[in-house]
Picture 1 (cartoon, rainbow, N blue to C red):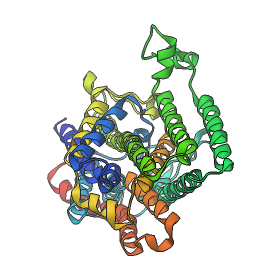
Picture 2: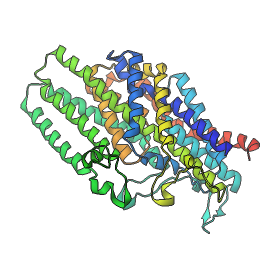
Picture 3: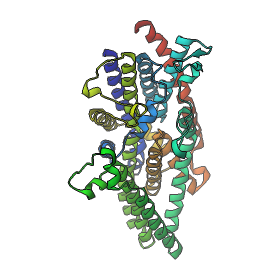
Length: 447
């Protein structure tokens, strides 16, 4: 039990480090454009990091918890993974490199699990509890097909999104930037497009809503038992889609008025919209990254229960993985602690990385800030819906590159960008190797 408590404490410390390491993702553009002072920016971002507690579910946490087969690892594996992730995060923060905290955690978890499999079974095949022959690399969930044609999961999908997340962010921000640029012109066609987009958004979001009957199905408990309307409105799944609609409709409303505003009025409006886009991205950051730590804690509890058959867990540690019952069950204090830790970390700032994100990639104005943060937020919401633990760092960096490309290709400082890409590519393997070394060292002292 002592080792389990240590892992939970270290996981929350990692969550705190994640907050100040990734604070730049949400605040760099609002600081660079002087919409908020640095202190106001971190306070703003931290508030919405914590507010994500009421918005997001446990989809990403479930994916992270299943990175490795919890039936074949021990607590030392998870401890080694968390320690390695903390070390790499602190190093990249010190060097001012906006690497992915998410991939650090995944790489550390997977690397320690592989080291454990090699230590226990060697490099040759072995017969598992299911009677089938397994190998050391089978301990990691590399690829798992999605249910009913849904999105597949596994470490290979996470690795694929090292490329896909920044590309999606760049594509989305490029499209939003072109949309805004055309909306500034006195032409009827951008307005027709905007109205059509508003109608399509309302229809799409309405189609994604979970009705009250579905909420209470199979004994489900709505948040407001006395009100059908508020129960539907505050269902976490529905809140997320309401936010998507609010973001798109707000930008659309601005686009309808953009051509009638003078330069000063447009800049003032864009700076106010930056507050909205930054808040939206901070919500996505909190919801996406906090869940990864929840997944690690859930995996640690599952491993502890498996290692101690018949143990009776206290209610405050009564975690159930979906593979056990089909439902992810987690005591309320765990998500509350995770969201609090990342918010506290964001409050601590991360000024070295803010400088890289806010000015070194490309020059950022309020116009670019709105486009980049809006694109980043929407990308995070959709990937969270698909239960994919993407990197918020990669997403917002890609979004900033996307808005830079609307000016000209040379507006992006590609030398800085290439250095960032190398950090992204190396994060998972270096974290995995580091975690493997930490695992072998810990195994000498911890049984």
